[in-house]
Length: 595
Image (cartoon, rainbow, N blue to C red):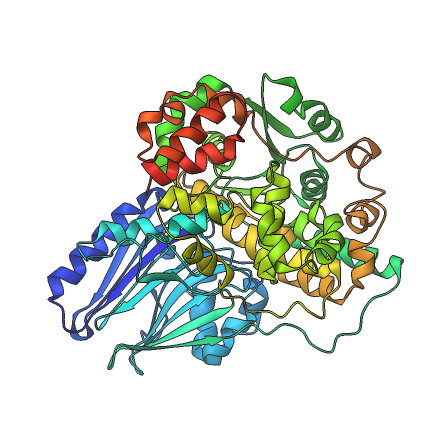
């Protein structure tokens, strides 16, 4: 797991290109503490850099950028390929010199060309240069787990793992102020947009082909969704399939030459991962939990139920309001793009790294895939409410209750409106006041957000899963998980997003996944003989921190002098009185004091 960057600019002075790539690498040094490499191809005006976090083949043999045996291909790569040993067994003619998955990508490309992208199973973002054809490929995994951003303007292509890297150059990347509208509505910045005007996110499951001769680009999809599938309708077959695939996923995600552990929150998802990891691990399993002095937020008793079943090394870390205050500035500096769900990831990663972990397994993705969120139960009523006249829905923005006001988003008559009705922060009229923009412009920006899927033929459960996966998880959970873990030089692995498991889940009748009496019923039944009843037979709590109390004590958040907008000041006063949710106050702070 690493950080990558690069610049293609044939007409630019060579020293300028090299200096800027060095600055990009330095800006992301936190994500690659184990090594640095920069390759410069002056004849074509191309430099690309790498910061390494070593997990496979910890020797210098794993140094990047890495060339293949023939020296035709060169790669800078961020990620983990979980089926690399399987692919390696198909590449027996290649003279492997390392034990890395990086070299497997190079060998695979030498044999299969771009077709290798679809054979890779894991999380990845990389740039691969073909010297003979003078072409580079920017590639991002089908799940969008690893970030990759790029800019194509003025005969120059720039790419990097973080927005920070673009800002570190001496190029004039201008702010795209529309990010504030997106952020105040979603609580995150949805792809492909970023805080910078000319920088966007490479779509997941796509690759960008860059011609060095013309500095032109083409975008192609390499990951096609399964079609004409035979649905699995039987409970026992579905449960057995889920069980087998998740066991294999956990086993492959434990593969590392460095210390690896499991984050145990005490909920269903992490408990299953912990128990499966213990079964799969040939050495002592290490687990980590976060707890609080505030009893209502602590899941320590459920964590203990799991750790009592295991003879493993377990560490519980207590996070207090004082820890939050002392680390607040560091947390803010670690944020790459504004987000409202990142603080917990920062603390988990901090303590994991202090314990010596290089990688940690996490339960991210289970709620989206197995129907764990309230949105799965609300989608039917959302569909009914959306049939109300748009004029009536629009007027609901004046309702006294925020929950009712958010119904105004249903006037969009699209999945964006449904998502914002379920999870939205501020309504368009409020956003317009906060950013001094006509409300019509705010509505247009939000309503016309590009989507790549037609949901009209989906069941309610499938719609909720698609929306939660492609909006909430993609733009918030995965970004926060990656950025905050890498700020501590830690890799977080996500077995619930294993491609084989996801392929199996797409074959299962949606009714078995989403229309059961209990949320995540299919997941629970798949491991009913492994998971203690006390873990699954209780109300969902969710992993969260006592942020309401902590942020109300934070002088930076509550100081109205930090907000250059009268309406924002009024909202912060409401927060101080306990009449505004902490997440909205945190969003306002980032808009007026952050990126």
